[in-house]
Image 1: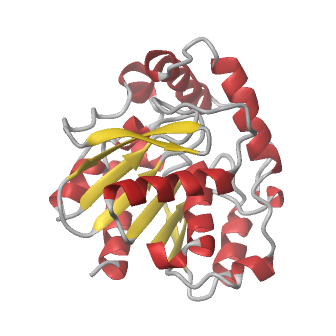
Image 2: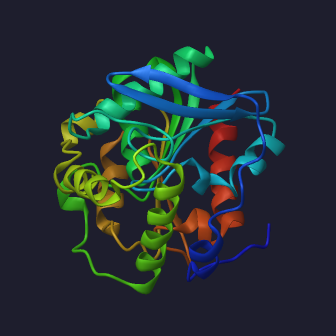
Length: 268
């Protein structure tokens, strides 16, 4: 795939590539929310968890690559994101992890590789901590595991374009299309205060983990990625050159290659 969109102008105007058509989609009720999910393909399963304020359609460049490599691919709209609903309880990554398990149960997936981007990465790693028997491996891209790992926020044209796309997509997909600003406030509060795991928590993780950090990540300190790789037993550290926090959209071929190498290692 030769697509390149480093400045996210294409994403702002058009979004990611459309997800393939599927009849394998639906909702699962869990802990006060209706969680939307969809699946494609057959073979060893891979679950894709999108970033905060986004939705599963942001994986449009990754789903065909994984299906083409012989995997069953599952996407999930996080609670309150995309097509999924939420109740009045605060956002918590741990609660989102239970949503993933509920989808896995509904789809009868005993175990899967979990690929997480930003907030989805937090959820993936918490799954690896709390339900290791269900996680073949966690691909942790562009995220922190305690608040000290984040940079001071600096607006950029790339971030503004992504945010504008998120607003339009929310208004088009959400069952509460007029609530975007409240949604942003609630998710931002979660990001500001969570997750909050210490080195001794990370040391207990026993699933295969790849810590993946982009060269120009706008939100995560590179030294935090190094710290995570040192703290999680056996974790691999992978640095992606030339891209930022939005690598799956900017240079899909580079990002997909990293995913495929990881899932080939952790899935039979």
